Amino acid sequence: MHRCRGEQKTSQSVRLAPGLPAAEASRGAALALHPSGKEDALFQLIDAAYARGAPATGGGSPSPIASLLPFVLIMLVLYLLILRPQIKKQKAHQQMIDELEKGDEIITSGGIHGVIQNLRDDVIVLKVAENVKIEVSRAAVAQVKNKNRSTAGDRS
Image (tube, rainbow, N blue to C red; front, side, top):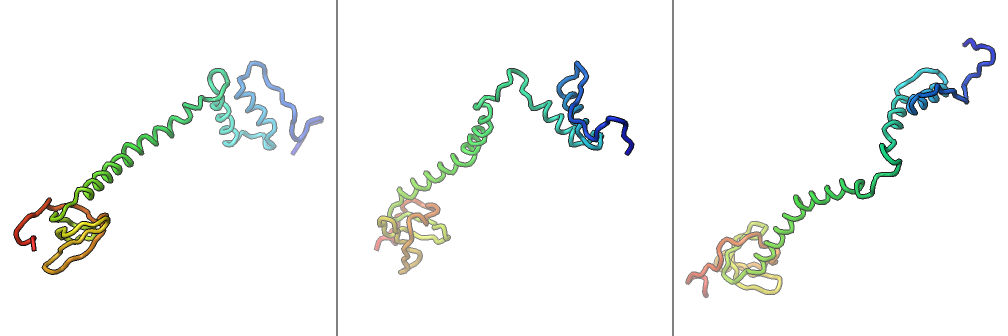
């Protein structure tokens, strides 16, 4: 590489032409410090980031409310689309379990069909066939088929 007299390998002081915008000035400084003297994609990206990074007015930081707004909106959408319907469904299921009575036809979450013979605190005695009774948890009730099926055959 041929060098002229007095020329240094890298220049530490950069002379900028008067009247250049700040982005052009920083590019000139970056080119002067770059050993190959060529402008590459990295320096173009850095210049673009500096040019876009400065706020348009005042020079202050963005308001905390504006920076938290996207998170608040995401939480609101999650609540309205996911949590609220699930809470409603859970309340309706709990109300159904609380309203169970002797003689109701139910289906358990395991798919067992039966008629309620006895209710205790957290246990239901189901009649699934003649002389076949099982105990299941109240939480295992998936749905009520018929409310209070009252026939002469059920009372023994």
